[in-house]
Image (cartoon, rainbow, N blue to C red; front, side, top):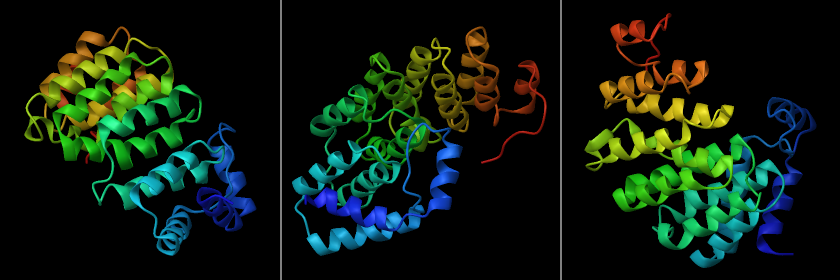
Amino acid sequence: MTRSADLSRRIAAAGDAGKKEWWERYLKGEIEFFGVPMGDIRRVTKRWGDEHDLAPEELRSAAFELLRRPIAEEKLAGILIMQELLLPADELDAGRDFPVIAALFDDGHIWEWNTTDWLCVRVLGPMIRRDGRPTARMLARWTAAPGLWRRRAAAVSFVPVASQGDELFRGLVDVVIDVCAANVVDPERFAQTGVGWVLRDLSDAAPQRVFDFILANRNVMSREAVRMASARLPDDQRTRLGITGPRRRR
């Protein structure tokens, strides 16, 4: 049994039929679950890591193998290995590892929003925060990917850092706006909501840029994306966009 298969077996053993049914219904059957809460996945993964004491290359290999497996919790365990074991040790490298992650999307191993967004928020976004402009530009190029989910990742990966704007590095706001401009032309819901989500957080740092973007792209943005993107804008800008209701606070 491979080490990744051993971890998969341990996670499966903690599954609950009721939780499995709930998550599969919530994800509308897009991916199968064991029914294991995130806290239990984290505990099992940590125990597995402590017992095996693997070298970084072995951990990377196990993480990518788990992301190629079909069950949601297996994929989440792979993400946790990257987030909690590799990132703190500075053992993830964008130049080396992003092509592998891109292939996971392009080869159909990541095909729904749950895995995509966990990977973005827990791993790819923190890598932008750590590395700055070079990693941000690598991810921004994913807007030219052939599939929806890697293109969504190009936007959602900036969610953890968008609220910092150019304080993180000069030009971050421009990079995020360019990513949104590339993705907003796709009417598919998850392309649109990826744009809306990152613009909402960017509005903390650059509200006028976000307002101008929405105004210029309202003809292609979904109503849902407009509401998401404008949720934290000042009331006068929201009124000009025809948005009613209370602002969403951070």
